Length: 306
Image (tube, rainbow, N blue to C red; front, side):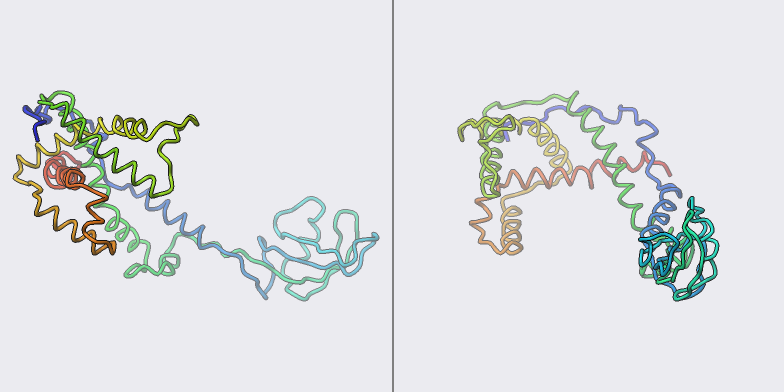
């Protein structure tokens, strides 16, 4: 490329704040996850045994001192002390499905037959809960903590590294020296705009329709999309600089292999793949990944909390 970064700012001069160094998952997060799982696994079930406080009791009124109450469904919630239902709740406790009782609801004397009893099964955070999660090797709360950290720690550590790398790259972009070829930048942005325009059309979206409801020409739509790509050109030069300095370069042969892989994976011909992408796209994505994961990322790890 004619455009390039000619002098790289010493990004290690940037002060790394303490909050960027932190990545470890606190016990409170794992506990909160277990509590959420306990709520998710709680369920209602019909019971045949003695009614307990907290149950929901469905009754049928078989007789009443007030017209219109016979055959009415009456719901009782023993232990809640709902106004007017206190006596009925008290009498329901200890009974079971099929029992009948004479009581009162407010000022109305009623005879009730208990039709069914629903009890909410509430899980607590304990070994019984973790045992029913069906996670291989997880039988206890302690097992779950270890499993959670095994699953999440690598990602959290990488996220922290990425945050430091982004800060470094922002400093590099703001303070480095670049030799820019305007025509090359224009073509780079236009290429992405043309591919993006075609992709949106294939996806059923018309790029000519603007957010404000206006409609522009195809050329204007592509030009606007190209302008949006300008902010990615300098980062691309930075990724290229670090990769080339690291001895990592994407060649035409590498791209040809990637085209073959994409064709096989998506059941397309190689020609169809090349109609949808370009080597510069492959370089941009691969170089960025290389910088974050293999070049600057390992350096950033040295600044993380132990």
